[in-house]
Image (cartoon, rainbow, N blue to C red; front, side):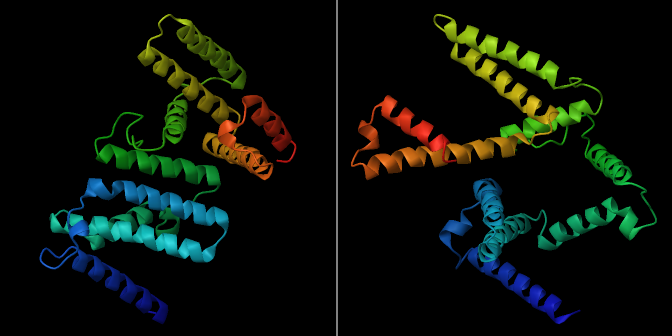
Length: 268
């Protein structure tokens, strides 16, 4: 084992021991002791997003720190699993190691793929077999319900498209989108409108927009992220301009803010 590998193993063992100390029933931290798999799940998700943000910022030191926070979440979950007698960190590491070896027979076995497409199809077949072994036999099984709604919608659509349940091209999706908009408008005009039905219709509209993005080769998550950033820049411009003019955004009129919004559009 190389010096770097030994050092990495030592640091990993140290982190595992820190978590064991924090969860010690007698002398541990009261907050850490009361946590469960479910209670720390939101923190795990949050840390994953913070890793993605550090990558986007291009800050290696921030990325190192955020990856450490995410690793802590894995160690935390492993410790809770070990205390319950379900699994420990070694079991987690072995499971993912075995999976990577199994899914790369062209590296660790005798398989060979002539094209990236052959490799992709083989990968999908292996994932299908793994789902079947877990009794996930329906086509849409295995798509996590806890994914962000936009990401899950796209995955559901892609999975259904594998068996031909898909629009031929974007023009048909546009027709469907107009239909969904009309249904939302109809529900809004109902007197009184049914809030549950309106939510259902808006959900259909959003699902259709995701479909349109997919059919045009656009990542809907990235598209909305870009728009969020654009909105943030323009709204901040409105606020900063008002402040610099000695005005308060709370007392500004919609017309004043709209004028500055148009200004901001020319600068972004």
